[in-house]
Image (cartoon, rainbow, N blue to C red; front, side):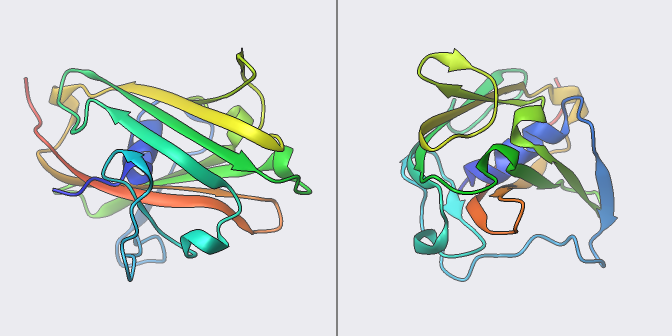
Length: 183
């Protein structure tokens, strides 16, 4: 099955303590959009671009890895995103929005915060951890424990969207992964 790393990253981030957490209905505006053409994000993951086409996203993703791929319950999953950002006004105040659609739940889970405030995510530049995205090379790291008893069995669809304060999209990608709940 194809896994979208960004959506999975969003799913993980939603299950970690986070300053803003919203739950919305599938009948409302929070329904995840399916991409017209699934262009894969480079790297070792099933992630694909969502939102604006890859060419119109401002953060150039060179590599995205999810390990293990596919993820398994009761194991820690690691995410590594490597890319380049041009000098852009508002880059240090960029936000990350994560959305997760969980099987057997009518809700879409959403979390949004400044990237530097997102507790499940850390930016690494020049071997220094923390802070916002900056012009040039950036690495974005995250990890999460997939605790089986807390998961519903089925396809979990997660999406991650990073935006500048003016609304322009830095990156947007998603993944759908099959996860088994229980011990």
